Structures are given as C-alpha cells and as structure tokens.
Amino acid sequence: MAVKLPIYMDNHATTPVDPRVVETMLPYFTEKFGNAASRNHSFGWAGEEAVESARQQIASLINATPKEIIFTSGATESDNLMIKGVAEMFREKGNHIITQAIEHKAVLDTCKNLEKHGFEVTYLPVQRDGRVSLDDLKAAITPKTILITIMYANNEIGVINPIAEIGKIAKEHGIFFAVDGVQAVGKIPVDVQKDNIDLLAISGHKIYGPKGVGALYVRRRNPRVQLSAIIDGGGHERGMRSGTLNVTGIVGLGKACEIAQKEMPEEGARLLALRERLRKGLEAKLDEVFINGSMEHRLPNNLNMSFAYVEGESLLMGINDIAVSSGSACTSATLEPSYVLKALGVGEDLAHTSIRFGLGRFNTQEEVDYVIDKMVQVVTKLRELSPLYEMAKEGIDISKMKWQTA
Amino acid sequence: MAYSDKVVEHYNNPRNVGSLPKEDPNVGTGLVGAPECGDVMKLQMKINPETQIIEEAKFKTFGCGSAIASSSLATEWVKGKTVEEALSIKNTDIVRELSLPPVKIHCSVLAEDAIKAAIGDWKKKHGVEVPVTEKAAH
Image 1 (cartoon, each protein chain N blue to C red):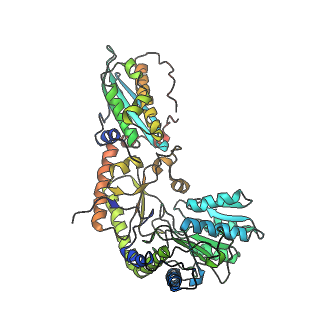
Image 2 (tube, rainbow over the protein chains, first blue to last red):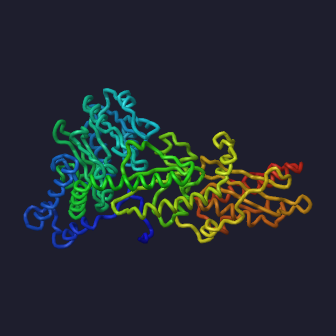
Image 3 (cartoon, helix red, strand yellow):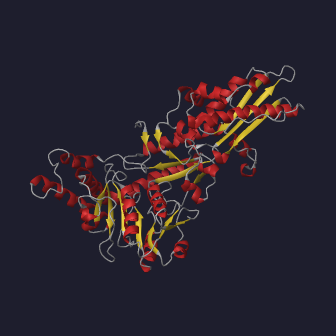
C-alpha cells in the first residue's frame, strides 16, 4: 500500500479531530446553538443538556463525578487556574509551592509569575530517567507548602511520573496535588481517586477533540478544593470560571473522552507495538542512537531519540515529508536546546540531535516503516557530512576537545 | 521555518563534501563552532604555495540547513581564488547570496570564521606570520 505523504507523527503537539467527534459536534454549530446559561427556553436547555452529558463523559474517563469538572479554553488556562486559584485561595495558610524542572511552560511560567507575588517555588530536579525523585519531593516539603504540581507525563519525552506515590505523600501532608494531565489523560488510565489527585488539567486537542477547549477537575470531597477565579464575570461554572460555555467544543471534548475510554486498551497496545517497531527499526539500522528518558515509564505513543552527530534541524529538513519535532533550537536567538533534555542531564551536543516522534490514532504500520527508511537514509547522509561523526570514527573523544565558542 | 531556495538547493546537493589530508603541508584546516552550540564546521583548503591559489576546498558541517549551505557556498567561492581574495569574503556576502534570515546570520559568521581559520592554519604551516585578524562580529 502506498503511503500518503506528508506523514503526521507529532501527536504530542496536537491531534486531528476524530471524525466521530466532528459528527457529534456539528449540530451544535447550527440548530442546537443555544447558550447553556439560557434557563428559559428549549435552545438553552439543549445546550445545557449537552454540556452536562460531556461533563459525565469526562468524569467517567478519570473516575470523578460530573460536578467536579469545569470547562476552560484549554489546558494552559486549566494549569493557570489550578495553580493560581489554589495559591490565592490558600495564601493565608502558606506561600510555598513545589513543582519540577520539566513541567510544561504553562506550569513553569505560572509558578514564576507567582514568585513575583510573594510565593516561594521549589523546582525539583528530575533524575536521569526524567522522573521526579520521591525523596527529593519529601525533603522539599515545608510547613508552608500548600501545593504540589507535577505533570502526569512529559510532553517531550513521554515519561510518566510516580503520580500515585506523589498523591499519597501530598495527602499525608495535607497539601493539594495539582496535575497537568494533558499528555496522559485519554492515553493511559488516569484515576483521580487512586492517584489522590486534587486538580487535573485536561486538553481537548491532544485527545482527538477540538482546539480551544479544555477541562479542569476540581475535587469536591475529601478534601473539598476551593479555587479563586482568575476570570471574573457571569459566575459560570460555579463561580470558578466565568464566560459563556463553548458548547460545541465541550460536546467534542466529551465525545473524545468517551471514545478514548472505550478504545484505550486496544489503542494503547496498538500504539505501543508501532512505537516498538519504530524504535527497533531505527536501532537496528543506525549506530549511536540514544533514547532520552525512561523506556519503562513512558507513554505508549512516544519515542524521543538522539541521533548523535546529526543536528536536529538539518534532520527535520531532510525528512520534510514527515512531521515530527526536534529538541534542537537553532532558530532561537539563544541557540538553547530543549530545557527538558538538559534537565535530564543529556549533554547539549546530544540534545541538539534529538527527535520526538509522537504516534497517534491514525498512524499505520506502513507509515512507521516509511519513517524508519527515511530516517536511516537522511541520518546516514548527514553523518557523511558531519565532521563530528568523522572525528568519532577516528577515535577522537569529542567531549574532551577544546571548541572555539563564540 | 521556511528556507530560501538556495539554502534548500545547497542542502540537497552540497558542494565539495569531504576531507583533505590534514598533515599535507599545503592543506589548511579550519574547525570552528562547538557541538553544544549545535554548529561545527570543518573547512579545508589545498593551497598552492607558489601562486597562493586555493586549488581545492572541502567541508563537513554539523549544523542546521543554513549552516550546511553557508559552508557549501564558502567552498564554492574560495576555490580558484587567491588567499588574499578568499580572506576578503565577508559573512554579509553569504547572508545576501543565501537570503539568510536574522536568526541564521550566525551560520554565515561561522563560515567566514572557518575560511579565516583554514587559511590561518595553512599560513602557520608555511611559517607565515598570522596577523591577528579581527573575528567577525558575533
């Protein structure tokens, strides 16, 4: 079967909307366009009913109750709301927040912002495998700690944190536990009860739903989490998030969660098999390739690999019929490679050679085979062009060389 | 990011890829950049000591498409030129020829540095005083 080009393999960045999701959404653009807050006519009721049904679908996916789900514009807003909302509500109780080095910028920059307003933030390092150390976490807790915010799975390396263990520690200390669940929800089982999660940020477009819609799980019992709103207005979503609900988007997010829940076991296994085929294919045909982050604790659809001696951006240029992303950042003024890989202790030279593959629902085995062949071809060509590869083959230790840097 | 047609063309068909024997007294080698910065260029030239003409030029580059194109272009330009003519090539000439955007200017700077370093190495081998040339502005 001929492979259709270009191939999309960047599903950590975004996913296409599942056609079943689109179909469910369509009526809500036109005949069912009512404002869910309109309480006195059938248009409004239809909107409200759709929203409540979506709340149920999302709650079911993460083992929560519908009342614990709040709708937002996306995970960046959810991350902001869960962190700023708790910080402001509980600042009398303490001003210390714990997070970790390789969170998404929506979490890191929110924490940095709070530092400007009197909060103290501990950024835990990660271990070589990309996971947070529980000992480091315990050591960082102070009587002033009000919030621990750690991501479920990382967006670059797909590494999954020991969330249940962290949740247990947070609960023992009476500290709220907020989780950026963007990459994990819908991909692997996430259970807010088992994991003792108090707040969980969810995105629509990472799970084959539409962009511009997200959700936040806010625990109502044991303990009840109260939040200060960051958007004021009509008091929607029990006062936690004002603004007319994006009914169409919410319907899509709900349907996406329903599909994810139903198909997760099968889809997870299929993606894992494809990922392993990709990994083994590349490892068999290329020397000096290195995997970044734990293979054991990793999302089934992620592969992050460094192709030593080949700069990432030139690699992307050679495989321009395949959409993936690179940890190199030759386009930025600072030339800084990925902060995530740096935090893992991956040398900057190898960080510049990294590629992130994000497999998704619509990738096929034929596409994986095409990607393997193309990668091998381009890496081989660029290594012939690479002075570093030549030096390595001559037995020169590149790390011990003195380089003329600007 | 979109690359100019000329960058793409050099990337797809790089000129003068390879290596010359570095021990050859007539070969000058320039190795500039650093792996942790994401750019390393090796530029080599075989220079006739009688005529001072650059008879051969080879390169290998670890770096983005613009870095590869800049060094490929540099080898094309220096070939057949005298040492003095080659030293007059400016990074801005490379920027213009390849239509490099501002974020890629450092690639052209590196190519200019590589030309100077290769010629400097050759001059050292021939006991010529190497003038302390101003490094191109980074």
